[in-house]
Image (cartoon, rainbow, N blue to C red; front, side):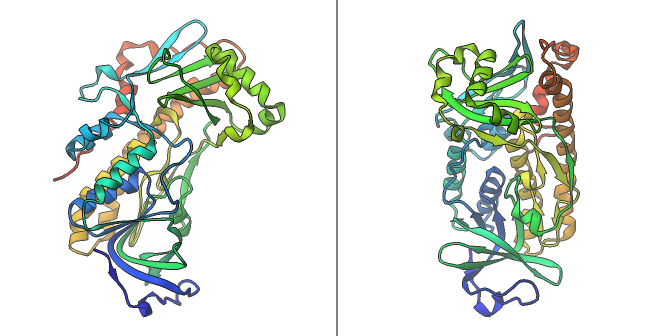
Length: 418
């Protein structure tokens, strides 16, 4: 449970300018970021009676164009927690294959139906519903506390050890002191910046424009990719809407804006003719969200008292939609490794290193796979006006299950320790 701390303990002149602290609390684990990694880690710790505070900078979980894919690896984790049946009672769609259609052919990048799992599909569920589901489950445990609108601004550091955070919200400055602070605050991680973590970056050859168009009852369920001349369109099923990704060459956004919205609409219809009528629902650039695609990982995921997981530790390309699932696997491993040290109220640097050691290799492998697909499949399409010819490796039977396994289950299975 969180407990009050005397105000004089919040005065830390050796680190940051002193603020008027509205209140100060302690907890075992302070998690910054209420995305999939942070929410699942908070639930796992709370289930074990570990006091945990989850700080989310926004006032709700509803964000445009967040990833909505829950892969078989996460569904198996939900089953281990006894939550899979309730989760699947929420409105959702199922994607059993990842396919790309060209003017001459249809190519299957990943077929999940061959996998040995009770969930041989990707569950298409709005992330806001997933996060609400997880945090509502966590609120059943008295050791869990969720604070919305908590904008973390500072780390509390004493003798080189992170002791917690200070955040703004709810009437002023607040302070949370913790045995362990976890940065799960996404690709633009504030804690990664405050902790001065060094990143290794790559340069994906693409960016993405996101927008929504109506989905008709006769449309296929799940999703589909379309390849045209110099054009890639991906469509993700969101019930009564398609979440459409227009993949563009890296750095090409300003040129597209200058050409005008009508040119964008025309280029989409050339690749997806059935959008001829629906594209007229796109009236203004304000309906189009720009995503600068990045891929990176920090060299070291931890400092004394601080651990990064999920996108805060490794930014994933959208290829395969694996970011959510690798973030949740990070959370499971972190809970498995750190629960006992947290209960003993002493987390060693070696404990944090163990989390990175178990998760770094799978992260590097999936990022290498994403880079391979981007260079061998996406880049040739975006950089050419000729008809796309699928690479031979996509048709080799021996490789049929490899992309599906990497995307759906990850490199190594991750299980919840009871």
